[in-house]
Length: 245
Image 1 (cartoon, rainbow, N blue to C red):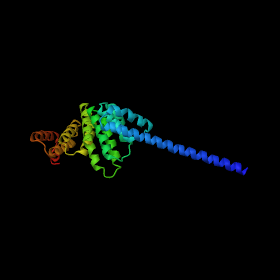
Image 2 (spheres, one colour):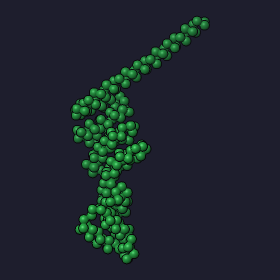
Image 3 (spheres, helix red, strand yellow):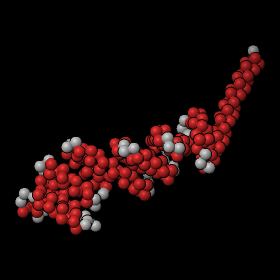
Image 4 (tube, helix red, strand yellow):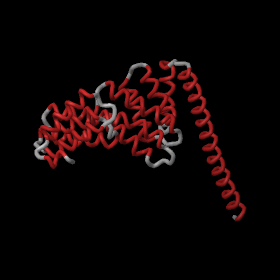
């Protein structure tokens, strides 16, 4: 009986080893096919053969959903072909989920997404993408130069959203967006001017005067613009004390 038990145990171990080895070889084969498919797709992308690269990248992502290099190339390929919606889908996925181990590529993906949103005048989407990009980079050391790429898009998005609120006479919301924009660029005479006019519309004359003073202090402001700002400042001022701020 002991011999039979030992034989059964040996058989089980052989089966277990065979299963493990089969899994290893299968995984290795899958990895090899994935690498080969990516190299083919990357070669086509490098030669600007986007229409040929796209089906290979799609197949690669279907087999390996976490292959973020393929996700990036697929988004960029769609963008190069003028398919903005598909480009935004894959590049946004890359920005939100990819590991931050290639900041140069991460920045390229963001700049393409931001450009597409700006091109379609999707200011809320541009702002959301920019803020998400900044939030992810804030967790990475030595990422300051990459963070700078978002600032022009953030200020433009806030200013455009503020203008939309201003046109609707929603001055309180416009003020919030102008102030948010000025956090990133305090030297924008135009933004201070618009902020002052919003405060005037809200009958907040002291805040308006302070905004016009900041506008006047901005560098490289033409004399004609400064005269206009002084006129606005006088309109906002209710006392000599306000003028002396």
